[in-house]
Image (cartoon, rainbow, N blue to C red; front, side, top):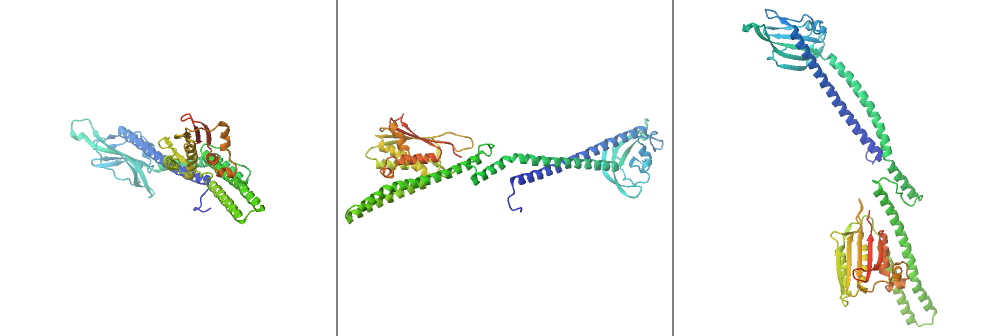
Length: 466
């Protein structure tokens, strides 16, 4: 697979985790290495300082100002030439070197002020065999006092203790080998652990893929609900899409069945008229009437099929502008009745769907209310149920002060599949369409007696969307 092509999630996450782990181990190794080196240098400083103070405490000065080393050496290496540990005393008129300094060429030390301490390194030195080397040097400025009143009995001097880096380099080398060996082993174990954890954590995604393949092959009708909550929006959207496609197919079948059922009557009329003894003019008139009727039926069923269902993830729509436009048109049509339409709309409430669906629901419910109302119509729109990470639901109600709907007629006016000629004449067409649209949004349409105005009460409730 080329780098330009998208890799699998597992490969991408494993690669990212591996790079992150390697970067962390490298930084951790570098930090530990620097910490060990600084600690080793600090320990060397303390050790050289202790040797310098011990050397000064055991040493003395002769009358001529020459330095006399301690009788009992503080470290045997100071007595062995080229041992790697050296002592140097800088005097006002010269300097003194320990026996171990015979052979190597040490860096020249300067006179330091009293009680001033220095720690330098690594400094270049030339060893006995002529090979270049390095050493750390600790120095401290002191004042010798012979205890007399003569000012000449006091003079400054500086002691230096030097140690080459051989032992320190060996310690650092051993530490680095152990450090990277352990870090490498830990990194390998962590990579294996990451691979196992990643495979386990991505198991729900693989389950989703397997279920989706089963749906594609027709072995399952929908995705199951046994998924982590992070994947629930995905599986629910897939199920909603599957159900929407099935409902669209069912609507198309229903529309074709309704169209065929509606065309039966005009065709039967034509067939009967052709067999009768009628004049040509009368037959032409009948044919023209039935053809126009069939054309109207076809146009109506096609328009209804076109607006059936809804598109998932539609943009939110303001409800009030659509309601205003519909009410203004109805007020012109029913101007003689003088119907007053009142709005009770919550601020910011929106419809998440197709504009045609909103117009279909509002138009049919309001037109039905205007048709049967005596003088008042009430439109109520409020925000419905709210669910986490979902679009809010919707509550929409239309009330009128008309005669209302008898309880035994409610199921009749809402059922789908009445004859086409009845639909053309307006017997329950709009409410059946509203029922279909509301069902496409997983909502409900209820009809009851209005508690506000005493007439019919049509209530639409849409659940939270995806």
